Image (cartoon, rainbow over all chains, first blue to last red):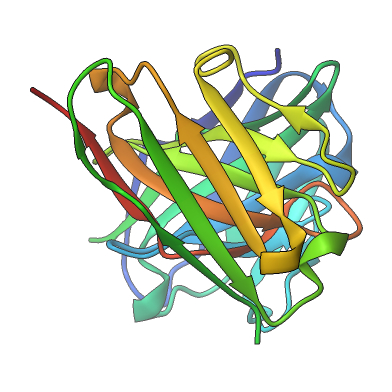
Length: 110
Length: 118
């Protein structure tokens, strides 16, 4: 079973700053099977990035994803007040079929 | 507009059972794989179960043998039958749609809270 690790656990930044979030897999993951979600308190997760680097519908271009193999990154180029939230990466494994989430990175206001 | 609305959560004693429902609208329900994902208070997301368009089902080891996912396409509804519930099953349970092209969740419901406690 593939385990996802996210770092840092908490990222304290100011609006306008750049955020770089890491997701590391215990073994190689197909880029097609790596996604990122944003979750705000009391809300369901929202899809941000799929296929490691494709933005979901309606997601601003300040959000970008990159990476391959075991190392993936979510970058928020300039933090807006509404971006302070928890971010999760997720991967799909096929043998057996399973879906795994990372533990999350909380981006909070410095 | 795609909508997923969960119901059926509540307080149940350890060892008890509960059935969750998810009402889907705004898309052709029968054409999509559907999933349940849960989240304990203050914790991360955990995948709970999946059902394919052909009715094939998948579970992680933590719930296999205790939980059963099913669907009723004529009613655009997804279900999760949960038996032998434990305190560790306490969480918000989300219904989620798997995208039609790759393995990510493109729509989520707002969740229903299940509390297992005596």
